[in-house]
Image (cartoon, rainbow, N blue to C red; front, side):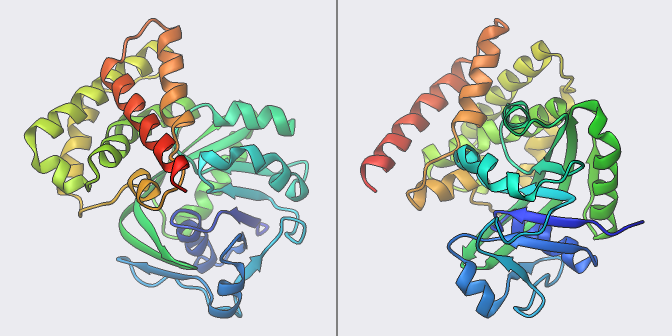
Length: 311
């Protein structure tokens, strides 16, 4: 099999980890950095993982400070937050070949159709990262737990390419599930993200403390059930047992500061459009009421506004 060229856009907690795994699996991986570019050129990319070290020395790191210097890619892995999706078209277009597969390693729902239309692509893939990983400094990533990917494609013609990418990840030590529909995969990730990302930011706490409070755990479950109802109404299937399984796994996981909580603490804009607004709009169009999710979204909007005012 001919080796593919991977480009990672956004080499933080997600892109840095998965890109480093592919690099250590022997794949040609290029990283597009923003503010960390000068640091990683001098010091490399450091991934402190409970699975072992996945660091890349400066001499072996294919680091780029502009999309204009990145080679044409077989696969583009997008690990930017959805708050930056307005710049994706300009970043990705110089990297595209006719057969390039773009994979959005992002939270939320609705990004694949929008970007496929902008780039004129017949298909585009998405990846849901079930991982506890944080960026602790320039070019420095701490991988705390998990790491499985669930991938799906928007546009059936992309399935063969997606299966090839999944095989590369598995060969690099990453557990991967492939679903025919990216929408099904995204609803399953939203089942966890909607309650735990939002509640962690509102309550300013980690997952273990949330699960240690029976009332907060019950609230998380109630929000999960609302998300499930919206998913079912949209045509996606989520078994009811998945709710209790996710709650049990969250209770057992190491204390984790969610990405939304870290964005709040670092005065960054939180990802509300794709993770909450799009979900609520879809549910409303389907006649599904999500009162607890709506209230959580409204509280997060207030926090976002205060953050913007205090920057």
